[in-house]
Length: 167
Ligand SMILES: [Zn+2]
Ligand SMILES: [Zn+2]
Image 1: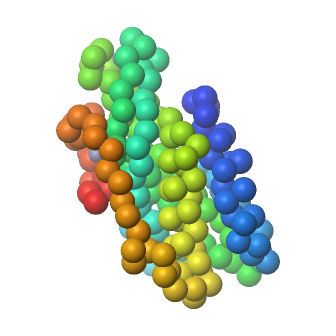
Image 2: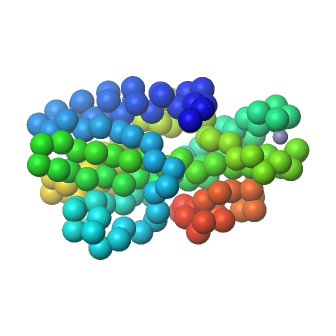
């Protein structure tokens, strides 16, 4: 699978964010572009949980070099704490270019700060749902909405699949 520049930043940021928590179990991040927004009975029984969120991100078209920003680059996480290790699966939803009207879908490029914010929110979920630690921070969390053009649902993979983060 061809890697978009910056994609592997997710691994380094995930490692540094998760290390701060000093969990006994080793947590790993993997990409999975087949994740669904619901868990089947077997995965639920295995202890998988879901977190859907979105972030500010940039997209660059490899066809016409148009680039755009979106405050609704949706992402879907599945995560599970096993007996000795934890696993996080991430599906980044892609967007199409409006300029060249090409069906190729482009992955979001998330900068370091935004990535850390996404991962911090994910880790709060992990703390709460895998370790039973209540999220005190979450209550008062301020969500900053950056101004971008209205979301173009017909160019958004997550919208078409009914998985776009609405919040
Ligand atoms: Zn284009
Ligand atoms: Zn969407």
